[in-house]
Image: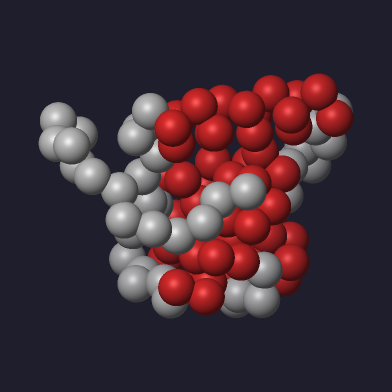
Length: 94
């Protein structure tokens, strides 16, 4: 597999800003959110898994929607983005 070009600081910040915008708008959903967070950090699956105390297979399952992550896992993954766990109303409900 060809090596990917490392993201610039600006690219990482832009990706983080977009993720934060989607979160505020209620458009950020698992499992896509986990992949988007990983990509925004510019990490491979193996690097991301190692950084957040997961196995690569656990991360693959998270990104494919086959996992049921613990609260602690979600908190560790969201922390670099300033995310906290909580209840969020469904779209169209207040």
